[in-house]
Length: 279
Figure: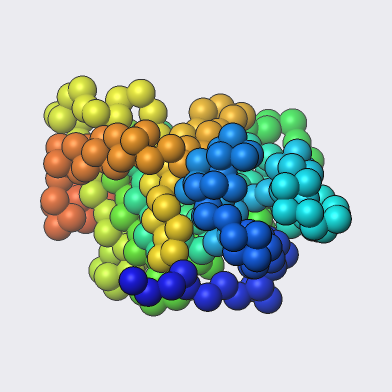
């Protein structure tokens, strides 16, 4: 069998920490599963720490230092690796998203963040924080637009979004904001940069009726699922749970319109919004 994929410790502080963890673990002649057992976590979690898809928290770092005899190295350095411009509940998901090979997302209420235009994002943040200062909203929009640059690469990651029809029909901001937003999605689809499906109202109840779902897969680490509710989120790495969420996504996709039909619906809705703005 081929050995583990070489890590690039120069890519980020977390990657540096992960590369050192692999080095020290192998030096101690422990497998990922054996180290995980001592930490009361799964072996896949250790693999994700080493690959940089999960952040290392201080309590875990302290235990690793004790088990591997690394004289406080991981505790001292995990602070730099856990700094983030994102809210705590979303930081790990955003960091994992940035190195994912594939992202699949079901969006029941809003356009996924990676597909949002600045005007749409501004309307969303203003709705969340109606009394916030304009400069605070500007900062949130800037951070979100930095995330969207992930799609500047022509092929990676593969991004597959299933939009509930409610996402297309709910007017966020003005009619012109919605027209521009939907045309942006259509443009990405026409350029074969993303895959988009629409789950129509006629589908009725479906496998993900309870909420949003994001799945992320990686070249050298186990897949993750991210579940988000208002002001909170959960990153799931337990393999049976992730497999269940993957099945859920597949079932939603089976109930959705085809990509071609979905694109036609998105473009039609964009024209409707444009006509509202300029009858």
